Length: 374
Image (spheres, rainbow, N blue to C red):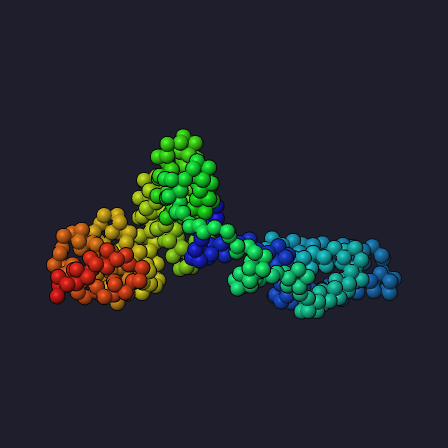
């Protein structure tokens, strides 16, 4: 199973995505260490040149230049190790220490020339991903092109008319083989909206279907814990990312009322969702979806008074969400505050009816309360 299919969870994957191995291995083009390396390599070249002059151009005892060479090599190794312990990049410096200790001035000159050549090459070289894309380009087929290809290949042809059956209907009316395949699909592509179908499967007459449904629910619980760990880890890496905070709130919200997870876990999810949503509102006080989400969770948790108070506050702030008014009306009705419900319907009924997906019976009920207030 993948992370829930929603753009808000993409932020989690972006934070936890491993670095490209080719980027990790690339040495920075311009750093303070590079400038220090050039200065140190020039000085080391001059020192080794002087030692070579003492050895070949004077009558000094040969052991002295050799001893000086050993001392200089030792100092170079100590400096390299010190830089390494400080966590600095020492790839060039390490190579310089090796070649200068073995070949003296010739090694330092070679390391210096090699470093300069590397800098010139880095200014013109191509990233591995770009190079690979140029050799094996990725084809991005548009939706219109895909439909056209399907028509040419005859993939759109079907000899008979057919309808799509909901998972709930499959669990009630399907054959045992159809139920097995539906459970497999629901498990691999789980969404909390599929919970009702799992509940039906748990009461199926077939023992095999009941066992498969119970196994699937256990797998979903494990998946919930794994995704939760990923979100917590992502937030630990980027504690100030408000988008991650919203993703965390959405995740707990999605698993707050499934009805198939452990009841105590779902209770904790509701609390975590509320806390996360409220924390997010401190960073984005005018986020309409979050205001509506908090009211919805309070309402579905049975806290009608808290829900209506919260939604009243949201409406007073100018938050305008079509579904929010429905939760507000329902909360007033549950508390039997009929006079307030009539007034609320008169003030906000038109906004609620602007929702094109509103079922007709609900439209009629809102219209009735609006008429009562007239």
